[in-house]
Image 1 (spheres, one colour):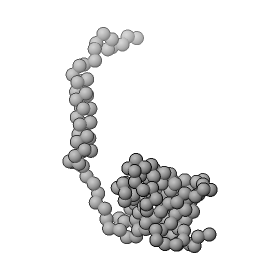
Image 2 (cartoon, one colour):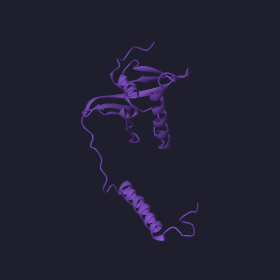
Image 3 (cartoon, helix red, strand yellow):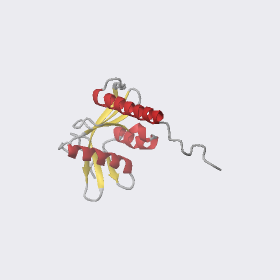
Image 4 (cartoon, rainbow, N blue to C red):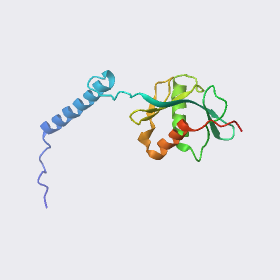
Length: 153
């Protein structure tokens, strides 16, 4: 069986049109990204509940979560159990290091009126909606928001 397109070049006009379309899409995306023109951003709704949190690494592989200015512990996170929260923290610490910011400064965890659960770094401006990672992972952060402060042991 012979190829019906054998000896016929691909139409040049189609290739030029495809290249122009790809170039336009890249230019439009860059315009929105760098200028904000044409982009949309959902405004933040008011805070319903919030808590500042400080994460302190311990020598035994655990991380203690505290509220600044309060005596006691909110939680003790273990690497095998609380991997999602610790993974988010590692990313935040890495970003703080790139900004030469204080890695021991508090973070902000807030529940918004629209149900968003945001984990924010006031020093770098980074904001993560932890609901995007599913209800189980969001629940890990929600526990930190509502946990009672217990005495140091």
